Image (cartoon, rainbow, N blue to C red; front, side, top):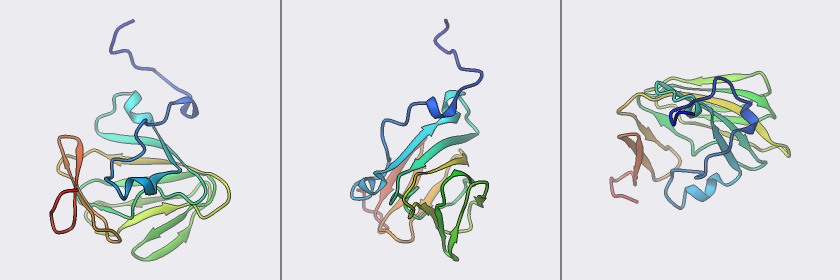
Length: 159
């Protein structure tokens, strides 16, 4: 079997979760406890966009509330009822609902699981180079450099 072998199809639930729960620096990384991402797109060597099967335990967040400068995102709820928090306010989501976030709008967003059961959703985002992210509720900003997020305080000092 070749070293570059990739599957043709998979059972998404059987994919191992990412070993590292978050790229955020502390004190933010610990806020991602209860979030589990399974990187589906990576298994197929997708380079133009990423796809994650994400599970949020009760009380968990999908991410810090954020907005991307050049990367679009979309979430599709499979199970549970997360709350979508944006600059507009809060929207209760249910299975079968989806939400999209156009790059460059500055509209900070994330999902919160305020229920007593797990939330499961697909998240899809493009991988456009030169992206940055702002975090309206936290002293954090990020720049994507060579595929790795680099985090600083809003005044530019590194974490």
